[in-house]
Length: 238
Image (tube, rainbow, N blue to C red; front, side, top):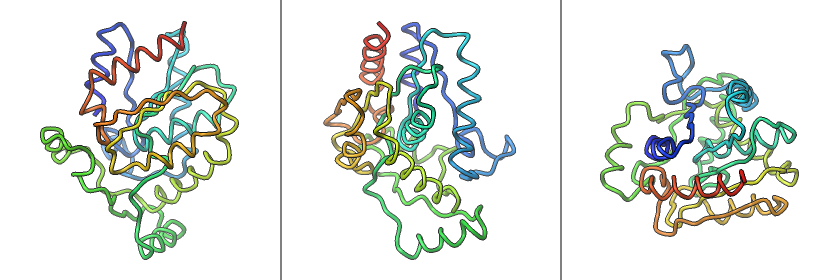
């Protein structure tokens, strides 16, 4: 879904690497991985660690970007590695730090039980397609995307909640510049909740609202997103 901004940034002379999370996108069964499943959020941190270790010799500056749930993962990884010199800042695009979407009590109980006994049990992702965007063309692309995850495992849900707590406890220790991009019409992400989470970031936070956009700004406003990201990266790199 980030292909549009990635191509525009590449045309401007930047190398852009798009990493599919373990169990999602192209990193599913064909790679020997269980769709929508992880053992722990630390396992995802390890994946990012191996990924970043390949970039150090190629680039003077590296910025880690994450959208939606990937934004939560990127922030958690940065907070777990405050002294890591392999990357220089974070870009969080409508990050899934707080959400308007919640699970029913019965589903939460089922997830908690399954996480301990049958961690690979799959549960539906409760986000209707119509909430991602109000753009009819992009709505069709998302609805027809064969790689989109419609279910994740009980352990994924459990570890996602643990990652929330991990971030809340460590956010005051942030040492990196962060560019936070929020969508004013987002019906998935709780923007006020995200801003509360990010408040104690030691003055290193820049916030930009796309007031007219919904959740997937990378699909709905790729040109503006690429321009704003490049402007911020250049400012932070000079």
